Length: 184
Image (cartoon, rainbow, N blue to C red; front, side, top):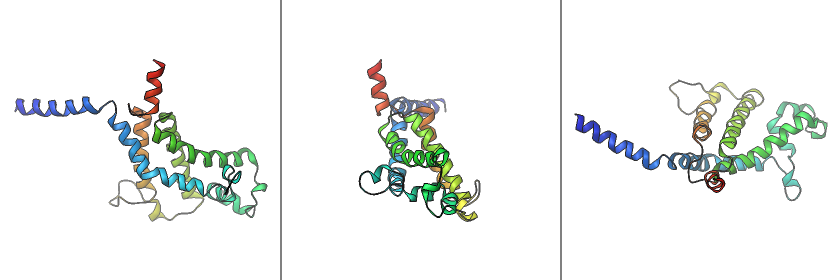
């Protein structure tokens, strides 16, 4: 039995040593890229206008998505919404949706970007539940028998690779690692 335990430990400790500096950070970023990169980039594109400079300015759609009740209350005339704090929230949310996913995928400022995306997902979830009035089935609940609620289950799964990146970083296959080596 001791030989079997030693063999087991040797295989899996060896595998851990081989992969620990690069694999899981890269895997978390690739999972994020394959599942969420284009989701967030496409969503961000719905928040800006067309052409230049329209593509640099949050549109009425951004206000309607981020501050739906307030935007509706002013008849979708966003000039009636104070820049501070509401317009600033819309600008920050719009650009976070463009910038943070790209930083995560390339592995630059990864821990801060992943923490920002977790906060973004939390705010997005709050807005969906409170302002867009989604139903209980869409919200779902934790520890039930149904693993596919669009809000509770999906967003928890979205957050796990991000949480890994906050805690452990992006790994050796990242710009953070390269720039870190250049500084040393």
